[in-house]
Length: 348
Ligand SMILES: Cc1cc2nc3c(=O)[nH]c(=O)nc-3n(C[C@H](O)[C@H](O)[C@H](O)COP(=O)(O)OP(=O)(O)OC[C@H]3O[C@@H](n4cnc5c(N)ncnc54)[C@H](O)[C@@H]3O)c2cc1C
Image (tube, rainbow, N blue to C red):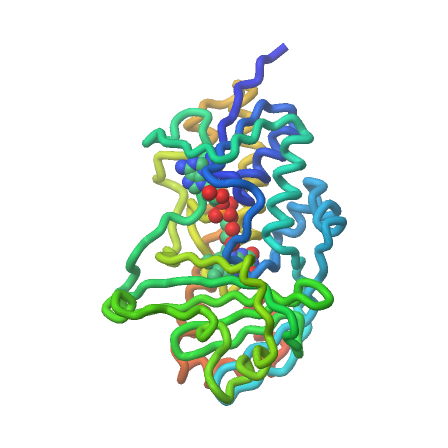
């Protein structure tokens, strides 16, 4: 009998837990190191949109999410200045579940399958060598192109939506609203601050997430009651696309590259990357290929799968932060069925 080599996964987020589950389903010994505790609230719009939903299906995780209360978002609308988008049907519905529940389901499944999960255990080795997968999430980048990105998330009640997903674009950021269940909405915003301003400005998250006077966002949030325990924030997001080939380590999820959150495709990419890693990692574990071969094969596949998507997402993000251009373009996208379909498909 072949003795299977163990795999160590650093990072118990979506990518790390999912690859751990897939490897355990193949009988491979797995240890996941997680610096924090699971579950916890995380900055995220909390809707999975894209091919990662098929990964969840194939790994038997989608049903677990549904049993944990996941719902579907079927419609979306964008708002920017005078543009009040029509409510459009999503070409493929998104899956909505809080990260608190999603992470809890994945962690439980990993342990049920015999994986070892070490919580509050930070990996401190400087290198991620043979048999070690890096799924440590985004690497904070304080400044990118002269600006600092920051994100906030909170759950709120008493928010009435026109569409299941709403994107409200402002001068220096956007706020997404996602219906989570009967009475709870995820309110998640991404903002950019010029470095000079960011340093001497105290940011009030309620103000940013409630939008400016007279905006549709302000109207939605007028009676909102925030669940402050669910509030979380991140800063220093690296949004420039990165390639896997040429990296000295086996890397998955946001640790490899972040897709701009406006696409709602980051979680999907984490799931897809985890699934793509299963075959090369299993081949390494069986001794069929070297670590270097497994890592190179995976890196090639990730670059091929994500390059076009990242380029489109980058363009969409640029558009989102140019008010004049976006107010000229959004009506075209939203009133034309094929353009809406094209942008949707190319960014996931
Ligand atoms: C504002 C915003 C909104 C978003 N909205 C959406 C959305 O609506 N839909 C969507 O699909 N995606 C969204 N995303 C993106 C999505 O949240 C990420 O793409 C996804 O969480 C990536 O998963 P991951 O497993 O790569 O990283 P993470 O979920 O960040 O997990 C990484 C884990 O690694 C752990 N870790 C780090 N270093 C170490 C160490 N040295 N040792 C041990 N553990 C370590 C961390 O504690 C963390 O738990 C959004 C992101 C932002 C910023």
